Amino acid sequence: MTGPVQVLVVGFDQPSFSGAVVEELGRLREAGVVRLVDVLLVHRLGDGSFETLPPPAGADPGLGTLAAELLGGGDGEPGDGWSLADAVRPGSVAAVALLEHLWAEPLVGAIRRAGGEALAEGWLDPEDLTGL
Image 1 (cartoon, rainbow, N blue to C red):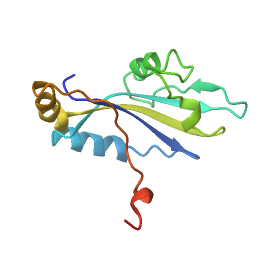
Image 2: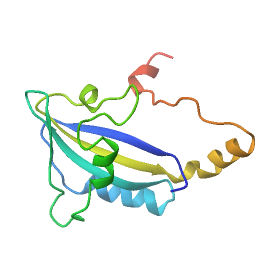
Image 3: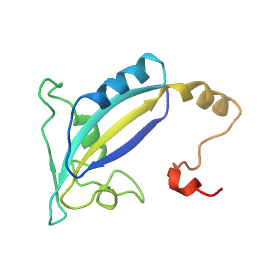
């Protein structure tokens, strides 16, 4: 992997996996924007625990292995200050996607060559920008 990898957690109260998201990810890969590294489907039970859901029919049976490893074997704790339990509501389903940002590879290289390093990153919700 050469670009930065983002952990993206997308929640669903009632999932409807039509294939549209996978199709869009394919289009973005073809355009050199992002590459789906892995995706893990989880269900957060009412008691707060998580269960891993099987990959959709026709998907690679190893799908989700890397994401599960990153999450510490499914306990939802991949790193300092981050918890899957903070992101996923009890009773809902989530897709934990690892996305490599291919577009950022030249930028990351330029930053490294300049002696820089990433210190923090985050994504603003569009609602945060309302009224600016």
